[in-house]
Image 1: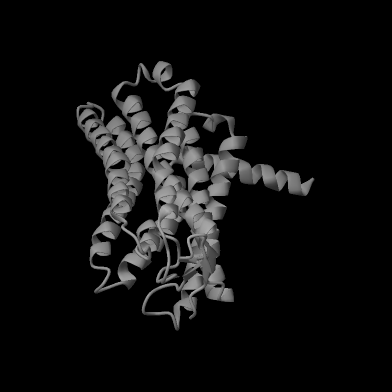
Image 2 (image 1 turned 90 degrees about the vertical axis):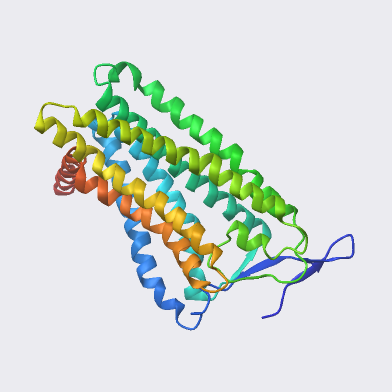
Length: 321
């Protein structure tokens, strides 16, 4: 495939667009993967939209825990929509080209949505910690203002800290290769094509992973460790069971989210020997959490199930009229 190049003012060749090849090593039959990816995308969209509508219409769900869940649903929709439509365009229409600006925008969107997901998990962990460990103070601590301030702080933190990622990538000079053996524009995958030094890009990627992912993960697991310790001190077996049941769904999602990040990072080191593994895991990590999150909450949270039933009953009533 020919490399698309244009001349800059400095008379040096400059790539004008990138070409996303898809999954390395399986280009001939990768289009068959469009079926499971489409189903996961539709599940993620449908389930998260249902959660948003249910929380909006059911006044009993206008509580901090479900407000954070609504933010998580919005973030999941954004994360899935950032990558899946382009991947399906590659598989269905062989639309492999992507402009530099669109590629850098996708890099930014992926990073900010991933960081927001981590931040919302932290918000929900703090909410559960206060609810279980300080139940009498919960109504005065976790208020509507608390939810707004905490969410806005996560948006501001992630927006500012992720801006340098696409900015640094855009400052690199791409003068030869423009083929990316991936389905999406990953930061390291794109910058590896640059003709100049990318040390600062790799360093900032590592810094971002530690400052956001590492700190959030540490605080989240510390919160749940304190929760478990507090729950074990409860004298009522019923109260202990209820508290553990409430937190178990959170722990399942959080464990999968952070463990997947670690696995993707580790397998990326072996990318030359097994290039398909990190690429496949990277794609799945961007679509499975958005599809899995609402399913786990719907199955584990009684209030949400009741809300779904009320919404379904309201819809049936309106349709009959």
